[in-house]
Length: 508
Image (tube, rainbow, N blue to C red):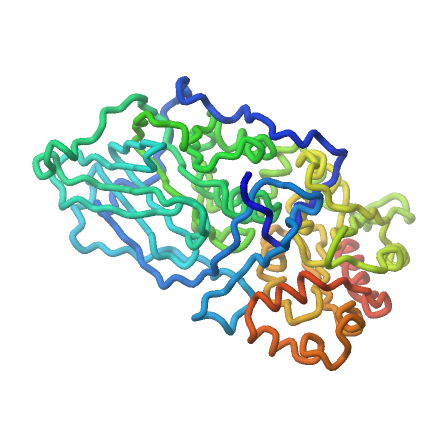
């Protein structure tokens, strides 16, 4: 990959080192050998208008593009900030994306209900750009084009540009041109659609990697969770068309992708043939950070999907044995303790006194495992390790993404670094953790617990006036509070948080 890693969250997993060579992915089908497909269930209602465009005021930050995992901490040598709020939202340096809502549709000029052809596009949403097409849909991957060929009379030709990555402002991800042709009589011969080289009965989802993928938190928040929402309704009978396909990424998450689709993914950039579908979704819709909004997506049984469904899906995918934490109230042994996994980051935002924190957790009643993130770990091994514990503790960072593997009813304790970062911490982990069916606890670091105090002194604006640092912009927030800070937890002040975690597990 040509790009350096550029996000402050690390690739946080644990296992023995594996080869650094980029693996070939068994998920990618050869452009010369199309997958055989079966008849799929309907994704889109045929009673909606012919062409529907939804519009919302955009409000999402530009993010730094990153590439494949390189260094051990997965954050790159420059450690550039992940979020860069737009000038219009300069006062908000939390970086949180707004929660998606059901889009409002514009029905003007639409064909009557029951029409066979349909395009529903949202290219001005607050977070994502998407198009959903029903009818004679044709793709040319290498040309980055998707075309709907009308079966009968229609309005004029229409065109949309869609970035198929879940964050619509992500630079470095090429847009796909989605075109709805005019009726055959209205279009001249030069605009006639190319004939189908491969015809599929199954629907397809077209999405892009690149962007911020390669960062563990973004792998889930930007791709895996939205892809689950987009494809779960098919029960596996769906084809993935992948732009910016990265074999190492597809291999890393092969188990998840195989559960979502029974077909080999198509490397869109190398596929010059015209593929024909009856249904196609372009782009992934990010509901909210690392979570789903119930009612915006449904499963194959028609039931609304939630983040708890996603974590249950992961437990099933990786054959994780524990769906619930230890039940202390029913334990035959009074000495049985819940297990806590303490994430010890190897770089900035470290817990300096990790041994002291471990002893405090043990005194509170936990059996403690201390583990450091590894970028080269197999996801299955990480999942099994995390699932063997009842609680997860760590400073704000990608390692907390592993909460997705905890048994339902477990506990996540997020240590929020000094610097008024609580809003961002809750958006990235607090709300998602609660949506997973876990208990979320938060411990905010005081100035006296931050290494910034001894580094800069009590009169420095970073210590004395965090509000002023936020007003100066995201770059300064990320530089100091995320990139130069370690924490020394006051275990006496932290003790009530540990007690809350124990009390919660006793009630399970």
